[in-house]
Length: 234
Image (cartoon, rainbow, N blue to C red; front, top):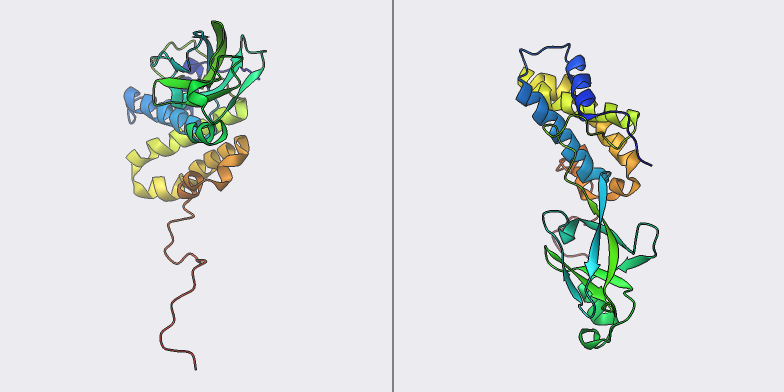
């Protein structure tokens, strides 16, 4: 579902309002960078910001080059035939293609069924298209960012806007001292991470999330490995 409620300009104004309208202690650039960091971390944890564009599949060509100024293959989320309402191609890896489709490199052209990332700027299509056709590619976006047009909108809900502001406020609090950042304002960061976990249920099991939450920082954390015992059993 697309949202068009909070523009980048309004997002920035909301942050300044949280700071009490203080334009002296925090410089304009510091506020911009804190908000951009919040947007970047949110995108890393949730993958919320997705764009799409059409790409031509040349006839008989298995390896297709992408416009890397727009769609690095590592950022591709899904591919659909013709348009956003067309049937999807199944994502797969090069290894799975090699193991599952004997002689795939000499396969005859047909209706593409699978796609795989192939380096930074290419994707592999199997089987190659028998005729030139168009696919719609959805990919993770590097936008929005503060510093672009202030009329651009954030495609997230109001409650998540507040979570992003929490993170930005936590980043800015480091200028007030470590006690403020690590004790007084730290709960704001935790609320942000919990909101990201709610948004992306898969996040909970990743090492990235555990590291952010500090679950792996304790050296006394229980382990599955038994402690080695000295001596021989009698």
